[in-house]
Length: 308
Image (cartoon, rainbow, N blue to C red; front, side, top):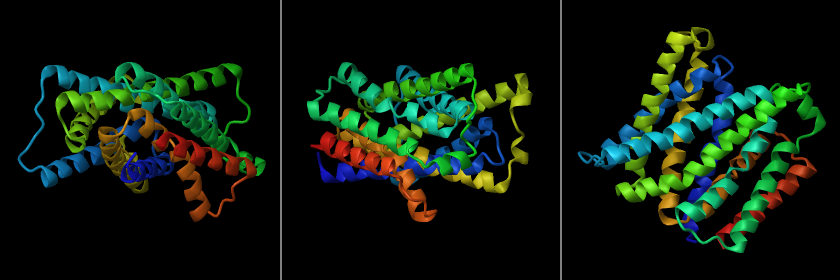
């Protein structure tokens, strides 16, 4: 595995690590149904600018079948998967939702065998499992005082609510895990580079989320907030999240899977919760617990294993 590919995977993970922090800031003055429409604006604008700067006058060739493939991939992963994840956080809190969602690299590894014909070595299996265990330890290893102070954590939940929340988070993990290998398939079949691929994905994304927004506004007006009522700070946080996570993180992921097996790229980029914890440690002076330190070790060992 080339060193630069490994480093790009870490940078992509860093882009995704910032996303939940920005979403959390944005949702202080916005509802969950406002997150995707606002993020789609900066996502599409950034990818359009990338096309005009790096590929002036050159646009990807599309067939109806490839157009359908792009829309289906975006609808199930970036739209449905993200929305399930956001609703799972509202149901059972961020800590438990993130823990369940951490299983998606394992789904990707299994799907990569059948869809891409990738040969999964013992080290990749061991590394993937180590990374998942490490992420579980990192996300669950907070102190009791921190857990009690976390406004996202619901300490008294009915069994039905817990079941629904876990099912939503698991559905999000399946959407992400299954669709990651198909991004490489789409790039290969369309003959597109990462910028072209994610420009098309941004077009599909903005169309889908605004169509959904219009349907919600017409049929279920009580579940949406007028965008004019969203505070400027929330707008800026969500727009920044769309640029960093969807545009930058997406293109970097596309570059990585273009040159490396998806079964290797996905576990490494899935370490974003670890980077989120490190950011909290550096900027908010939060101390890592013993369990979190153990999780860090597992993630590092797992990343080394899948990259060998």
